[in-house]
Image 1 (cartoon, helix red, strand yellow):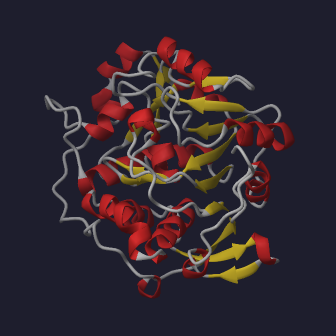
Image 2 (image 1 turned 90 degrees about the horizontal axis):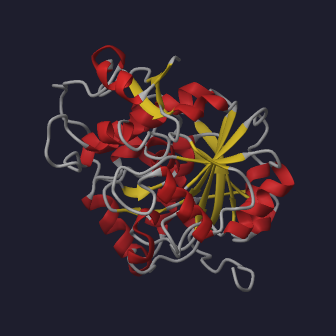
Length: 354
């Protein structure tokens, strides 16, 4: 895909992609949860450990790293300044030192004005948050490029940071949590928003062309646009991408809210990994639904009022994975368990100070 400078890309939108006018029938209701026994299709494998530590992160990753090779980008939300809920840096450092010594953390600038809006601000925030133990590539620092969206109804192509094309493989390392607009933030949000560049791609996802409200796209349409952005990136990497979701410090707020995030009220769970993006995000959501009413009340309210479940149904419609899965308990000899069983033991062992 040809790399285009910022202004040239703006001039070429009509030919290369951008938002499309749609008149499709209404999408499935993203506020309605689909129980496991009502799903159809094949099952993928999702691995699970309650071990919330660097060792647990490494264990989960090593189950799903078979096709990661070449130049590796680790897609990680590095957080606003002093954000309290991001994946601990020490865990990520240990993973990279053991399994990915030559990898780069990859990020993009934000659509909103804040600590990561410009590359200069972003690098200052990286320094404050301690992401200084490996190279961090702000992928839209030197411009943008477009990559195709296969089968998209909102986009023909997505605008991403141009440096995305420098990588052969991607490890998606995600802090699973709630999200103000998306309902929840899993691997789909990490890629769909996180790889779209800060000025063009994120605008396509969030804003109706010509609107004065930069956040006016919501509910089903927003979930679909975000998912199509994810599909573009997955199409670029093919089989050389894998997913790890950390269910820890799960506020209903995204890590982009930093110190202003809502307090954590959902119990810690553990770490999941898979080579199937839909299966891993679905498993995380299923575990949340399997909690007691007291444990999951706030998170379910956030997911359902934003119609966040449309992320899952649209990933399935787009052929991005399976919403059925085999959940493998790494703490108990690889035993197959259900989301309900995973949600029964919410006392993960966490090392002191982590």
